[in-house]
Picture 1 (cartoon, rainbow, N blue to C red):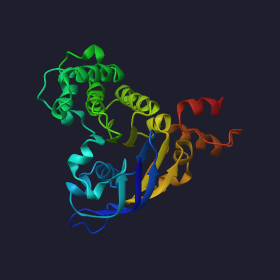
Picture 2: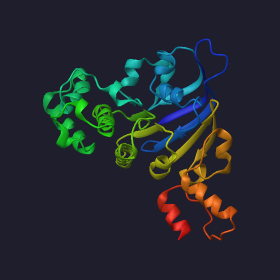
Picture 3: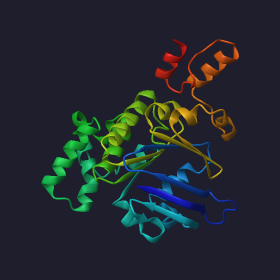
Picture 4: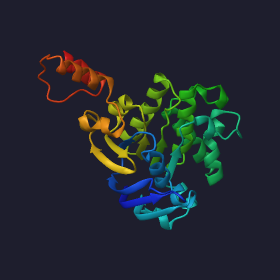
Length: 278
């Protein structure tokens, strides 16, 4: 579904590339998370998957980048918009302000696509239920909590049925409850195979609990790629400016104190930690 082959990208007038020789494939239906320190290239990679790189930010893109069979460099932003849905970190910036209710906000994109009214109503109702917003359909979008607004932003993208959903740190401004709401919706989406989910995120404990796969970017390069338990428990994580989850840190501290454990792998989630320390 997503294929990058030796992709390198530099912003205009930049002296070093933001993405440096990245090669990877993400199959359809996978929930793939990318992590990295600030400036690692996560947002640039998200922008590239949605076509904003190079069509909006310009700059120089080399290598081959394909999303759902579309050559990003050879396509327009309008062509990409029907295939890739992009969700930003701040839901307030994604709400149009042109509609007075949650239902109308979800309908906005479909109206612009010219979807027939009957089909529109069916898709909106289904998406509101999926995102857990059915009981809030008549509320103002600005009357929702941060987590609810982010779920609304996601629903407004998903209702247009993109094949790939790209999210750039969508929980950065949310509390733990709001973060869990968003991650639950994304996990359910990937589980239905309705779309491929590609997420840039800093909250490693949520990534560990929900993602199928984790990528690590460092100074524009892909330096790690694997299962969450393998990548997030790796001792190499700190050299990329990242700290392991609190559960991994606790297990390492216990090992350093000489406490014996039989488990082969360090825990990265609460559930794994309970079993590890049992």
